[in-house]
Amino acid sequence: MKRKRLPKLLYADSQGNIYDHPYLTMAGMSANEAVLPESVELIPLPEDSRLFTIPDTPPVAWDEREGRFRTVSHVKEGRRSMKIQAVSAFMAPGYMRTLLPACEYAEKRVHLPLWSYTAVGWDEETERFVVAATRVDANENWLPKNYDDRKLDPLVRKMLAEFPKNRLIEQLSRCAVDYHCFAAKNLFFRRWEAPIPTSPVCNSRCLGCISLQPSDCCPSNHERIPFVPTPEEIVELMLPHLLQAPEPIVSYGQGCEGDPIMQADTVAEATRRLKAGSSRGTVNFNSNGSMPDRIRMLCDAGMDSMRFSMNSVQEGFYNNYYRPKGYRFADVVESVKTAKERGLFTMINYLVSPGVTDSPSEVEALLKFIDTTGVDMLQMRNLSIDPAFYNERMGAEKRGIGMYRMLQEVKLAFPKIQYGYFNRTRENFFPEGYEKGWPISGT
Image (cartoon, rainbow, N blue to C red; front, top):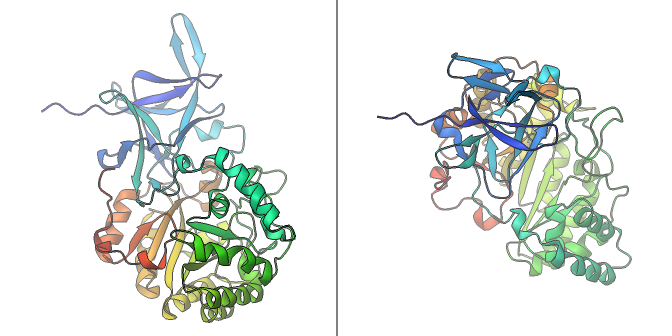
């Protein structure tokens, strides 16, 4: 039987033009170790994904002729030797990467911006790009093709005129138009999940925070909301969304703020009013979960679901990334337990990176964490950060067991655990057949 050829290495010239190599093979990285992707984790590059370069950083490829991985800094074009750089994919939402791009990160001269970096190659047999990834959520609402700015602009102007004194609508209009936040756009399209930013402050100092970064690091993707909206401002915008939108969700804790747990009193009062005004829709709370007492209060206020952000369920990895101020890892675990015990649909916003998330110690800790907390869903969100920077801060050197294999092991131990990428409506918390909801067919 003829063996299927491995995908070819992709590389780029100094102008960003992308080529496939005539014989060198695509590799990936788990932590700082180069590996060959397994066939089960190679899928076509999802529609609406993007390719980009890793500046001035040579790729690492598998040389089948020599039987080894090697760094490729130049390729020959006739008599000329051309310096090349690595290529990465940024995937459409709903897909979890299983390998990082393979390149010589030690030669990287810049701190990479806050994107998630995925190994990508060229499949010569099917003539298409392939990535090391797996689909973890079938919801297609969040695909870029659903967000046409030509339709958005008049809706933004209309709603701004409708609520001239509401500061929150001004913030969200900027998020929608300037930052292209899909959740903010949903508010103006009056559909699906809409955001409720509330807090200009946070008690974490996340390495990959998208709303606040030190000046010597990479730029933030957003600017934080500079005020705390009143319950009246929140309800004025969000109650019509719950009443009118299809599949309505309103969510506290979005990219353009700190952590809404810092404004728990305002959030609780607004939530009570929203629930009194409509039995329709889902009210969700995204947070670091740093204050269990406030989580109890918010549960009692009528939240339907809660999502807690964690890059790891090991205290050391967690502290290295979140750098908590005034709270402990144990507080987060208690908050997860509390939400579940109070009957809320409970999720982890699991910020994943190959080599850290699938390290043997993390997989073992995750199995214990699920057993202890009873969490319902792991949202497998690709951590947007410079891979070399993150691995250095986490002390990650050796390859993990494999991200796909990690998902298999967890699902085998806990069939009722759900994988996902997005928040859900109450009606879809436990869809029919959810125990067999991954792998998603057709990917």
